[in-house]
Length: 213
Image (cartoon, rainbow, N blue to C red; front, side, top):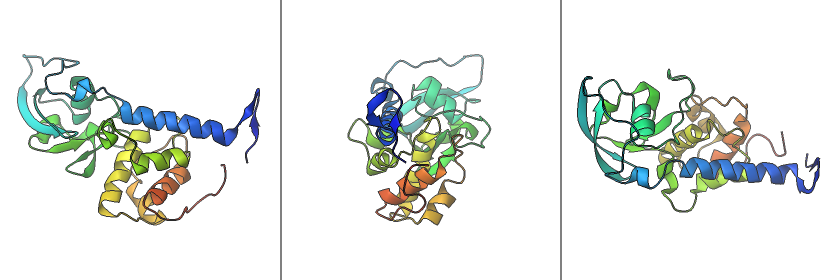
């Protein structure tokens, strides 16, 4: 299917979706500013001195940080509200949807279900750290090429789970990808495109659909 869009005679549906996917993936990669990743940047929120708090040392997207956190904060709250790295999305906020997935020591975790204080001495990578201001990674490029992103809300979590998979298995099969992304829900139901993107990024063969859905 490659029909013309109404009132847009020069654009096909595939061209429109490819452009939209590119914008969403680039936005996911760029969400959160360089300032937010720089040590000493002003935090979005301050610690309440009346609440138990701790100072932790962690590495976020390659930058060592000493951060004061409330002991009740989740990793998602630390990343989004304290460090301004809003590429990590909060969906269900109870460890079910996977939208908040980040890497901790290269392992995918739900950041809404891990306390920030547990990150002391750990290495955290968010979607902002994939390209780190440079060109899109091959995985991100594959997401664009295969129209993976629809509304885009789950895209950053999908990228992080897929990145972890490719680190441990550079050439995953479709079955490998489905297993690795099983904890990441897509409310748009665009699972086939996500699978195809990750397989393609690993140099494999598209596994599910060959044309527009």
